[in-house]
Length: 130
Length: 133
Image 1 (cartoon, rainbow over the protein chains, first blue to last red):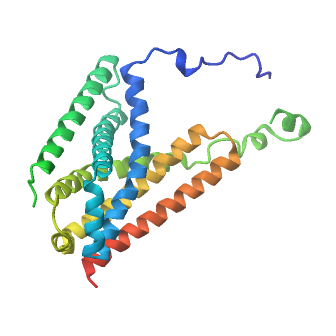
Image 2 (spheres, rainbow over the protein chains, first blue to last red):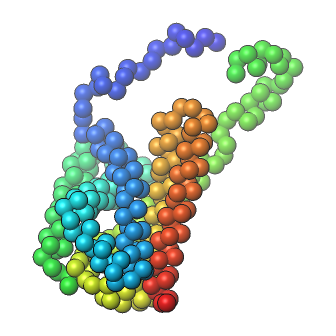
């Protein structure tokens, strides 16, 4: 049984970019980013447990341009991974796997991500809380 | 693998196949990833709304919020589900891209330990606030 002569699949870069593959890659990328983002969540919780000074320091960082940028990326990744994750769960039931549904679902996920991100930041920045 | 087969002509086809196939753990991993993702849908939506509500809140308000039984328990469940889901997902990514077996195993172990450390820190923080000093 020789393995050397078998045809290999071509390298990734010869394929044309398309919605399906881009969203699939994004699901992995946002998942990995969210794994890193848990560090921020744990820092926030530890600061809250430490006391008022530590919490004020954490809040000061989150309100800096770097903190806001991290929070914005965090929220986009979260909403995308959430919406596309639901799309994956739907696929797991064996439904929606026709090419047309896959594309429709893909655009719906992108739209839902944008809408959820905008709503969350409008509510957060408008001082809906305190 | 081919050389091994040539050197062991007395082994039965079954003997050669045993141990080479599935470790019979993949299904459980697949299921756990799905179950944690289902649990995370409502937990994440709840958490996002709670955090938006806490925007700009001072320390006392956050502690007061986290002292309630429901927020504390939901946050604990979120931490457990999220870190479990994260560890399962990252393991698949590592297994897909790291070809070298030693590097792959080492990275998975390091990733898992980091997850346990972060989860423990988060859970301890929540309990400290919820139960009080």
